[in-house]
Length: 162
Figure 1 (cartoon, rainbow, N blue to C red):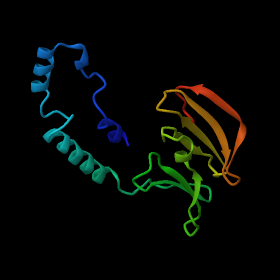
Figure 2: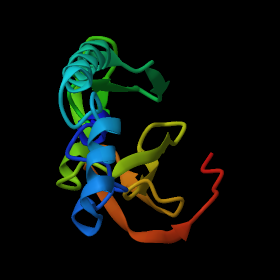
Figure 3: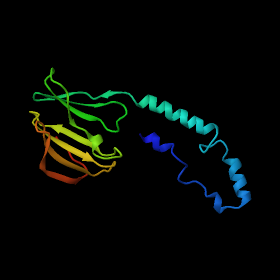
């Protein structure tokens, strides 16, 4: 998650002590005590990270929507980067994974930006965004076959997909 990267290593704008004289290094050492590089604050950062993980890592279910005989909803077990989209036939059907965005990229930054099923639930507009980009790619999915039709739109910035 985002806070894993926030506490890794040192600050990217760290001072290069090896390029400074001994008096400057001594002053920097005194001023830098207690920072995230060690000591009390480092323990505090670890405690903060643990607390944030406890707060954010819980199962989440999205609100279902019905189109035709299908119900569409998302789930996240709390540890996944992206929500997984499910489809279920009727109220008594078994939920099945329709779209699993966590498999689209190793770092988990490719997400399902849009999903808009047709009125009968046979087709759906699917929008994908990579690495938080404003630019998205859209296509049409045949829901029953779980396949994308060959036509697609690239480099879309704003689209009303309804």
